[in-house]
Length: 356
Image (cartoon, rainbow, N blue to C red; front, side):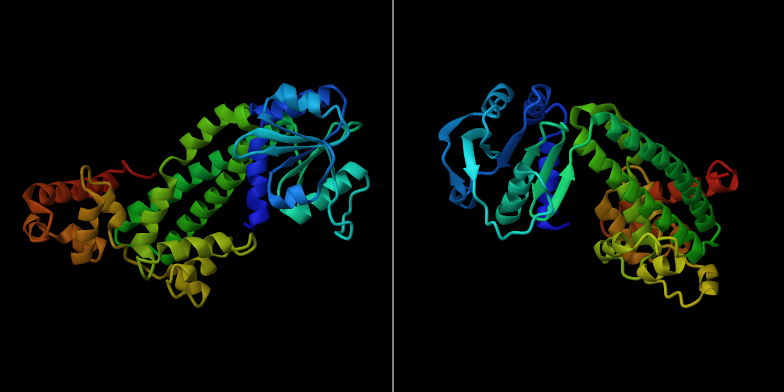
């Protein structure tokens, strides 16, 4: 994400429903007047200001609405939330290109491109709120439209989460049977990445919804709880170098929508050396990190210590209490806990309590 795009996201959060700025903008819309508002009080902004008057007063929605009755721009310091200037005429560089038609919007776009600060332009006739930051431009949507799209995305997330549970349980069963394949691992990672992308999209909706999206946010939180840690555990079990989780996550995130469906591409990002489709059916052995994470009261440092000494899940399941006791930081209690829990996991798989 570029710096302009990041600033635009902050501006969208600032104008979300329930915020003082959004209340002020809605008052302006109800009064059927336009407005030109700059969110930033920097030397670059001051250099293009002419006329108007200095205020330096605390921001309130009522004050913003009254000051926007005048034709000039309002300058707001978003760090302190103080109104610095009002009824200001802005003179950005006229050679800066703009594709807008109205004078207010043309000035807003040029000011944003020159200062790289958020500039809000409200159309009196169309009652639309436009935000400009650098070369970025967004129209502020009504909560109803955003909620409709967000609800559809949450329904999709729910379906993908259910499917992920299924393929993850299948992988667990196959791991305990020593028959997991590269395809199984790649399928799980594919589902996890798609869920991450849907969640990211919903997060953007929630930022723009502000207080209107509280219930939806709780629903999303419930659906994705623990997904990030589960994703990291699967990676640590299978990637070629377990210390490259961040790199693998970044490469998965950068996959285009047409390549995320390619299991071969995903497997190669994990470092599993897939050169043809048949390689996807090659059996692969997990390190056992995810299985150890299911052992209650076992710290992450203890999990790493065990993994450093016992490198695969089959070896871990075959290890005796005495073998585990010899590992630094484990001791008799933890050794017994690990062996009993791994035996319980295997029993759950064989009895059908996990998966199908």
